[in-house]
Image (tube, rainbow, N blue to C red; front, top):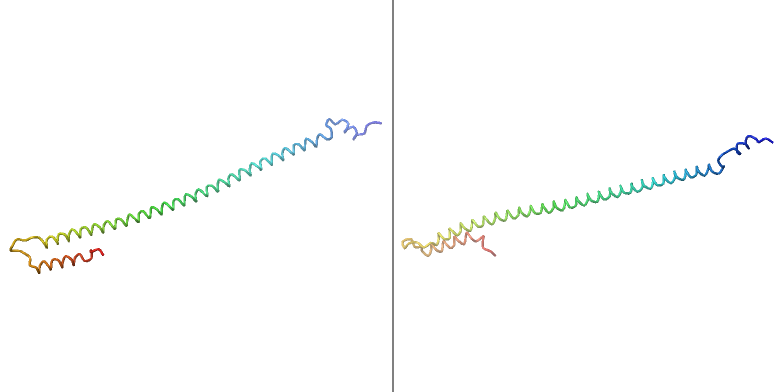
Length: 140
């Protein structure tokens, strides 16, 4: 009996019937593995990017806090310097006032020649004037 067309096709085929699906399956498995590997790499890169963004955000927040702290300290130092300058000006004014009062006191109680001797009334008035001037500066 002569071989039929179907039989002759199967008989003359160079590849066994099971080899084609196996190579195709292997190729699909390789493609699937490659896709999974790429997805894993993309996921890892995405996570790294998110970590980098979070760290950048934390660093920026930390730097802003430090900047705020230094600005507060600078403002406090400037305020303190201003207070010290005001206190210095006040002390210089008090010193000038004391120098002036010392001059007046010395003038009031300078020893004069005999013809210009102070009377008891003049000495009493001089003390009263002196203490009247210094009444505000007397420590309590």
